[in-house]
Length: 130
Image (cartoon, rainbow, N blue to C red; front, side, top):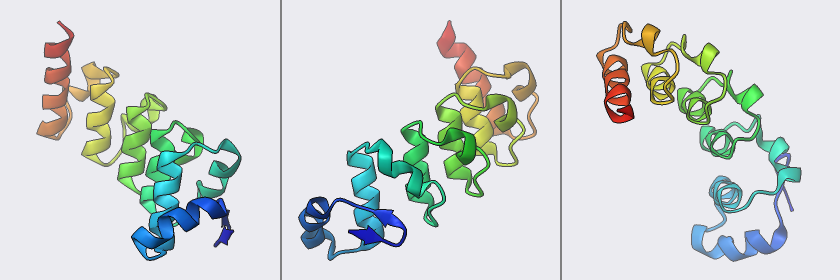
């Protein structure tokens, strides 16, 4: 079955349809979180819904594209994968910078961050590392 530009296996849609009243976006979200069909994931890199793109990043897929995503939660998921930390350390969103600190990257820079939450994340990382 084709949903927008994405293909989803018909048997899975049938199984989920009853539970979610065929909410197309919810079906896609559940499908791509429960499965890892590499052949289909590329179709969702530019999906309009951030939850879909974040799910891809959490699976480590398309990080080279998703690192530039407009949604900070997607970029945070990229940082949590340890990808592109040299770029994400400069992100405008402090949650993304916190994720960079939690990876142990750029702590000497992030300890001076303007946001106290980022500085706290650095201190917690150093405390837990010992």
